[in-house]
Image 1: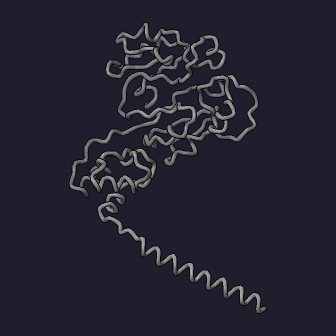
Image 2 (image 1 turned 45 degrees about the horizontal axis):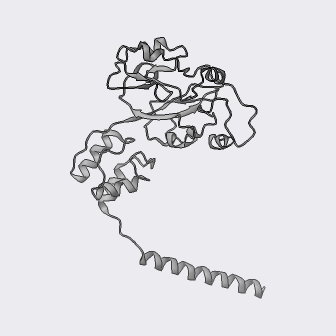
Image 3 (image 1 turned 180 degrees about the horizontal axis):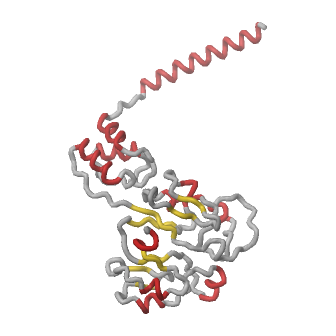
Length: 270
């Protein structure tokens, strides 16, 4: 009993000493919180998503308070949050350019050919390291890392293993785009209009494209030839649209044999 009692007393003494030391050092190294930073932080949505370019809401608030950042960088909070910050700082709110995420791949399990039975970790990052799950080396791997990373519940995986975005919830924070190892998620302005290509397959061999995915861009060039505004080019093996000239006429959508072209405001944000 004496050994147990001595051990307990010793443990209590050590705990007391450590607690006292922690309290002392906490007071010694305490940094007073800037009240302006605290006010701005309270006005933010608290998503800590990094869309503003800072690693968290508190860091962004500190940057605004010190004059290093503008009030309109929080795309998650939108114009309302910018107005609140401007009221606190006495500055200008500025215009908030709201963003959305686009899944630039339609290669679901119904359209793609698989390499074989994948038995590794069920994450996109692990699957990419293992060489991928599909014959298309550019498409969605289908394990939903983007869904898991979305703090707003805006992404859900379909039964065909392809992510689908709920645009009533998407804030365009860009976390899903950063998380995707295949870089198939693009972040664009919510007000963007025009044609967009939902494919990232850059294989220059047309026959291999058709073998790996039936809904990929075959590099046929019909979009380029039929665009009345001549605003599409194939220089990067994926059709690129010049949005300063695109007027959403839909000629590319109509002529594309695999329907990789979509009109943003009509087909995606409908």
